[in-house]
Amino acid sequence: MYLVPPTPTAKAPRERFTGDVYLNTLNTAEPPSRLAAAMVRFTPGARTNWHSHPLGQTLHCTDGAGLVATRDGTVIRMRAGDTVHTPPGEEHWHGATTDTMMYHLALVEHDDGRSATWGEPVTEQDYATANTTH
Image (cartoon, rainbow, N blue to C red; front, top):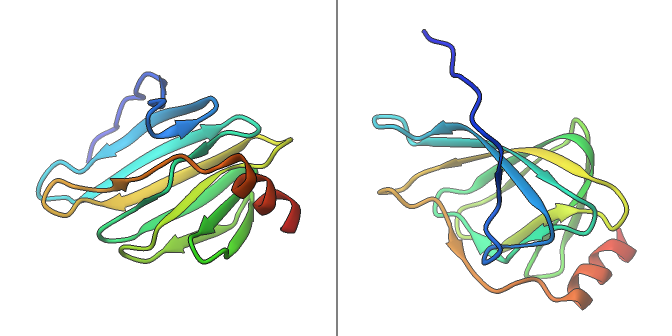
């Protein structure tokens, strides 16, 4: 057993996120572990690009309100205490609502060193629709 020291907060890369998103790594999937974990903080309006995970992803909202949406138009509104799981290969995005920050723990397993396949940014129209319908 050991205490993991806090990592510096990093700004999420613009090529995978819209708006201001901040990350703190909690676990890096050092073998034999496959689990990667991070605390992710989204400012109002910020969100991920479309993406999927080879072994799925679990998101646990710790503060604020956010959205998780899939290509088929399904949208889940997350609030503090809620947990959302996306199955392996399901394309989705997640982020804050238009007027509230959202913090979540993001948990993924690496599959041969890969944890995500990244796609294009979520359009303003898709983001607005998700916010107004849920």
